[in-house]
Image 1 (spheres, rainbow, N blue to C red):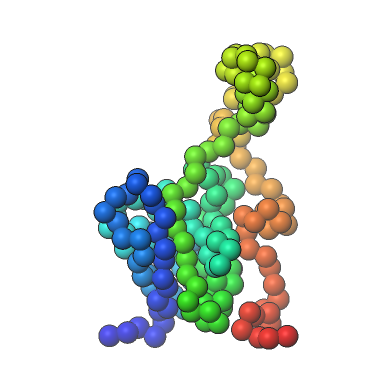
Image 2: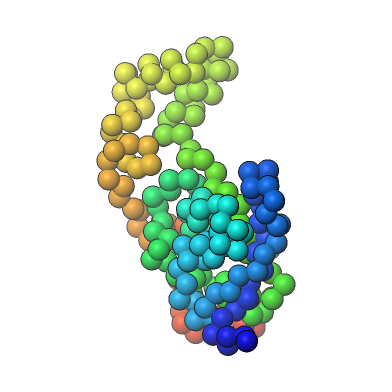
Length: 187
């Protein structure tokens, strides 16, 4: 029996060789009201994929351009996926208009290097120097922060989230549109 409060959503799984034996396309059901959190959606995907991955390891994206939804790398402290609901994105409205669209799910990429580390290593490699030594020297000289001075996910300090407007412009949070705005209405 079909539940009229649920919407069936196609999900393309892009796990590569890390999760062999998992189908490349599954279907999940989400609340039409949009009350599912991003973490709820990821949990449904993980369960439908046979439980071979954790919801916390998944990168969710949507639409023809695969716009990222929620956390964007492993350990990303920027987004609390248990508090952001699907209705905050316009995903469900877009699915009504374009039902052939769906979600894509891959594994979260690793945490990026701490601030300043990648450029120091790249410069050292270009100069045929030891990249790890270059980073250690830069930390001693105060040119890049020490790990103990950094916030999560690299160091022990508490993470202070940027303003919502900054998170929206960087793609971490959905844009805020007026209630009357809908992709179902042609202008």
